[in-house]
Length: 91
Image (cartoon, rainbow, N blue to C red; front, side, top):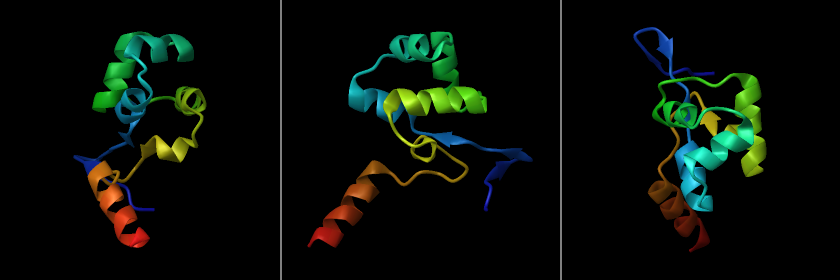
């Protein structure tokens, strides 16, 4: 597996903000649902904090998706690129 590193630190990418926006969920609502402070959600979204496995699994369960859709060691493809690729396949 390729890991992206910055000064020896493994970067963990996430799509928490994207999933929150898509579902109209506030940071506070998500934080209450998974049992953390709402500031923790902000730290996670900015990449300032890496979640424990337990917290990552709780967030994935909250959104009803596999953990790999929310967290990755590789940068996620942009939504625009994903849509372009899907449109090209559908042509």
